Image (cartoon, rainbow, N blue to C red; front, side):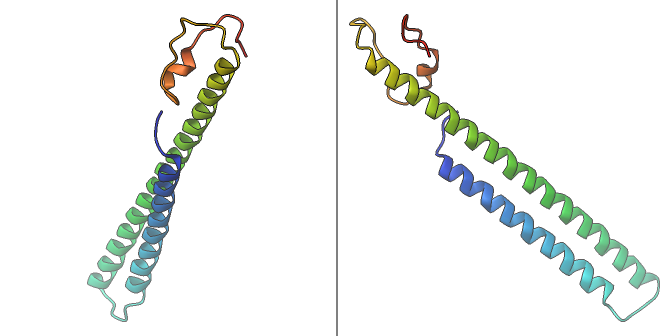
Length: 121
């Protein structure tokens, strides 16, 4: 649950940038292979191999995009839970009615399970 969402989102951006780089590399590889002047079985084999490698690079790029999307979802969930924790903390602070209540540390996930009568949301 924890994590600096700016760092997480930065990693997601880098993953997307790497995906773009991989697609560009795939396009260059296939383009160069298709542009060779020689012909024959060896040329056909080389082009086929380059197309296969280009396809693999594009697949890897898609996996990078998927990872970036998962990181962004994680960052959104961390933000949501941190906001919920802060809300519970504020609610408890407004109700200084429990002398015996020992609050969890500020921002700790245990705030999500605090059960105080009369402080419900």
